[in-house]
Image 1: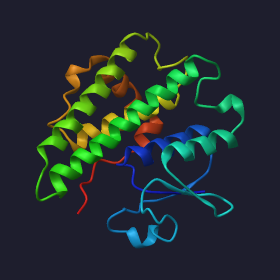
Image 2 (image 1 turned 30 degrees about the vertical axis):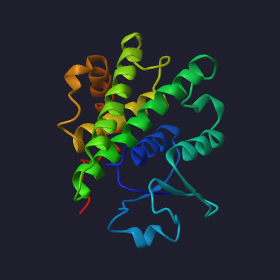
Image 3 (image 1 turned 90 degrees about the vertical axis):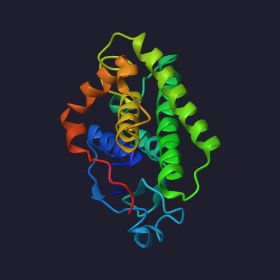
Length: 208
């Protein structure tokens, strides 16, 4: 398999970390959706990452769909989702909040950095959505005492949250103050210290 995209994208990074934890072999191509868009276009007309080229040369887009596919490839005991309800749908909710948070962070970054005229209404909306997601995630994590969000080992909820928060705090340092979210801060610091998170990592690089 070939994973396309840079690890400063939380979406690409969560797929890369999952591939490592699944023990699935893959090649990584650090193509940018800006400077390498013509390389990406033939594979993904949306020119978005992550893009995953499968061994049969079919191509998948969107981190949620890629992870759903990978979950079907690995044996059940290597799944990174809880096996039973209600933890399964609760983990999906946490991951959905995290990826939504990352998406709002991207929207806010593009609005404030790439647009000549900034919409105050859109900026306020994005900031409110980011703060709301962080508050809900903080409340959920604060109510859990385990090292990981669900159970005794790392899962997709943990990965999605850590990747999203790393991206938002690096790309929008004046928007998110992690001291306001102590449970999330501790969780993310613990995860970022893991070997797989150190390996699958890239400091945020603003688009040129």
